[in-house]
Image (tube, rainbow, N blue to C red):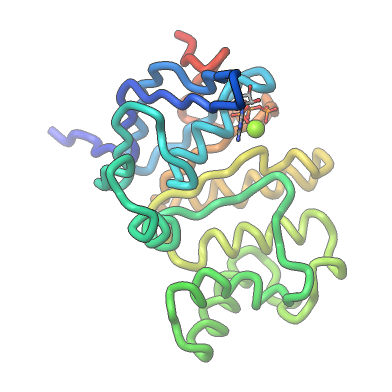
Length: 226
Ligand SMILES: Nc1ncnc2c1ncn2[C@@H]1O[C@H](COP(=O)(O)OP(=O)(O)OP(=O)(O)O)[C@@H](O)[C@H]1O
Ligand SMILES: [Mg+2]
């Protein structure tokens, strides 16, 4: 019997933000397992904790309590340097707002994670070019973000998420700033990445994306809904 290994294992995870005298419980006792190679969609109302959950999965932030195991690493016990290393090697992020650097060309944007991983320039350029070809942008290597359409900018962001060959890709409303047809192309791209074995977690309000997922979980007021 083959038991699917877990890519992500969260156990009773809590995240509380302290704002002066106010406490915001963004996540309350979230327990969730994502299998290797799974395509999971997270849905829920605005402010329910979706982005918070994704940022914990990617080691962008630490939980207030609970156990966060991602790709075999116990994230809640890593120090800042270990977390930075984890973010650089193990996960790829795609955000709603693309988050590209305006002064850099497409290939330079894609190559940034490799720069932080201390990959030499020649290899950075070769790997970034490969990643851009994979997302259909081999003809836009030297364009800067303001010379690209929204869909193309998001493709560059997807290429940047892939360039380190991460085990897990995390996307927070990746089609939120795109029209329906362009968003559909980005979803197909993410699906193709998942089909090659990469674990994919997508936060979305878009039912068309949810339809393509293997599993959809709802989060309401910081709790996973049954
Ligand atoms: N840095 C922060 N400091 C204080 N409160 C925060 C912080 N980040 C998020 N929150 C609060 O935590 C809750 C969950 O926020 P989160 O961004 O995870 O929601 P979301 O489900 O992603 O919402 P949306 O669909 O609008 O993106 C919200 O009430 C939010 O105001
Ligand atoms: Mg959000």
